[in-house]
Picture 1 (cartoon, rainbow, N blue to C red):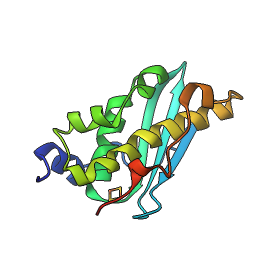
Picture 2: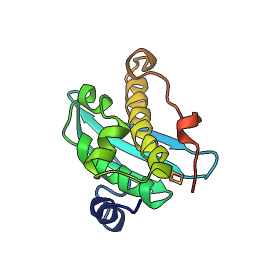
Picture 3: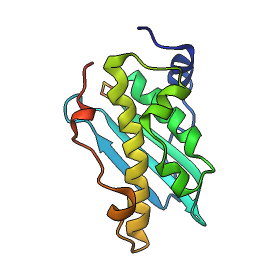
Picture 4: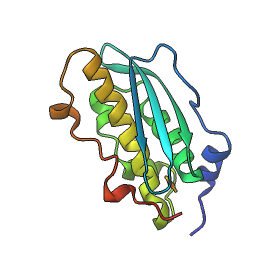
Length: 144
Ligand code: FES
């Protein structure tokens, strides 16, 4: 299965790339197998993600899914952002080849990691709200 036009578009011109100096939540997840790393920055105001940026050192699918995921959570409440699944990101990209599905999990988990960091900074235990971050789960196993 080839990459969809949308994946190619987001890979070639990813949205929301870079760092966010005034971020109040930063999450990083990595794939120990392929070494791909994703860092997500969020700026939260009144429970809403008013800005988001990412840096991905990784494959094309990881970059495209990060780009789409940031588009999907920008302007959303934290509650809405936490509902974003890798499946929804993939659907928004018109699909991914099966061997690349795990790359989209990285984007989903990076957002959760950034939200967890935000909660920690304001003194709230994120685990009951966000759950565990699956940084080394089987879902992240890479098949490059
Ligand atoms: Fe490692 Fe895509 S995230 S190959």
